[in-house]
Every structure is written in structure tokens, then in C-alpha cells.
Image (tube, rainbow, N blue to C red; front, side):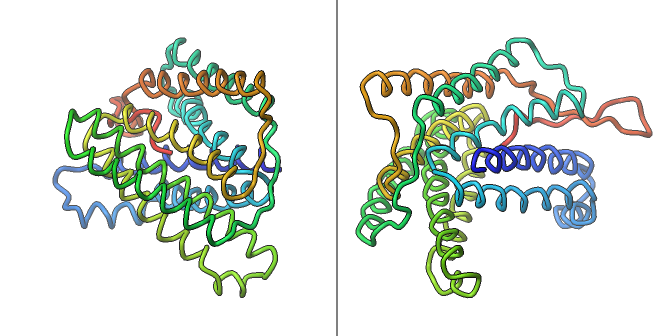
Length: 300
């Protein structure tokens, strides 16, 4: 169930990215003010459908985390890149190079190999207050260090550092979501809003979004996207083990294979971010000429 819902979440997020990007293409008019563009998007069916899919992403991810482990769900969400690529090929008829499909295959092989070898197992599910303090404090210090370092360097370096900071926040957010689903399961909807995890989800979600937008703004998408999709699974696996007592196979051969498969998956992420077609195209019904906008496999 966790794998199914994680895949649905990844597909829903890919659909959100494509729908909202196409709506932005339709609304891109130099003669429009930002307020007129916003009003246009709020009335555009594709943008509204994208918002509905975004809500589906959150629901599916929350269900996946309720049924499964962080170490399973967060790596699977990386398949959003593949779903986005497939949507662009089948729906938008973008031309996808063979090497790009090869990178997607490498990502899939690495992900499947890791899950088969690691066999993540559920832990105790209820972190202690001390555990939360140590986990949040240590990650917070790393996030602050990444933000300080991101003030200097090339655009690619700054984007990668901000993407890594956003990834750590999203990993923490996933832990909050998992904690909130546990509260919901035991105490119902009324009890959910009497405990802190649901409010922490909102705060971390907003912070993660701000950092992600900053990463996209300062440098190339390939740098920020690669950092985000590499750091997030690694940080989530560590948090799952540390906070929730999740277990991976830890014999020396298993650890060696897990490292190899994760490296393969991350290599697929980097190559897919680099080799994805740089243009997202929407054909106008009134004109045979395409309308294009900059985009890679789009954001997670």
C-alpha cells in the first residue's frame, strides 16, 4: 500500500507540474500585469486542475507515510521525474532522446534494487521528545550552514546548496506528516488539531517552498533539482532510522549493495535533470506555431 500510494503521489505531483506550467504558458503575456496574470490563472481550468492534483499529492503521500516507512516512500517520490517525462512524451508529444530514457531506466533500476536489498521495516512509530529535539536541532544547524554558504559562489553552486537546504526541510516535513498520521489514526480528526505535528507540517511546508523557489531563482534547474532529489531521500532514510526506529538490512554485503543502488539512482537523477528536453511546448489551437516556455522535468 505504501508503494502504491507513493507512486500515485509522484504521478499526481508530475501532473501538477505539467498542468500548472501549461497554464502559465497560456497566461504569459507581456501586456498583462502580475495581478491580471494571477486572475487569469485563478480562472484557468488547467491551473485549477493542477491545484486539485497538488491536493492529491499531499493526500497520497500522507497515506503512503501512514502505511509505510520514510525509507520507502521518500525515494519512490523521485519517480516524479519519470512520470513528468512520460507525460511530456505522451501528452505534449515532446521528443525525448534515447539517452534521457536511459537515465530514467538507470533511476528505476537503482530505486528497485535499493528497495529489494534494503527491505525497509517499520519501527516503533512514536519518537520521543528528546529524539525530536536532537533530530531537528542537528538538521537545523546544517540548514543554517547551507544557507550561509549559498551566499557566495557560482549560480550552480548557490542553487545546489539552496536545493540541499530545501531537501532537508522537506525530509523534516515528511517526518512531521508521518507523526501527524499517527495522531490521526489514534485520536481522530479532533485530536489531530490538539497536537503539534499538524502545525509543524504547515510551517515546514512553507519554509521548504520558500527555499525551493529561491534555489530555482538563483541558478540552473539541473543543479537545484539534482541536489533536492539526492539529499531528500538520504535525509529521510536517516530520519526514519533515527526517529521512527525504521530498519534496513545491515549486513556488510547488503550495505554495499544499498550504496551501489543508491548511487545508480542518484546518477539517474543527475543525468535526467541534465538531459531532459529544455522546452515545454503547448500547441495553440488557433495557430500552427507552438508556444514554448523554459522547463526541465520540472519541480518535485
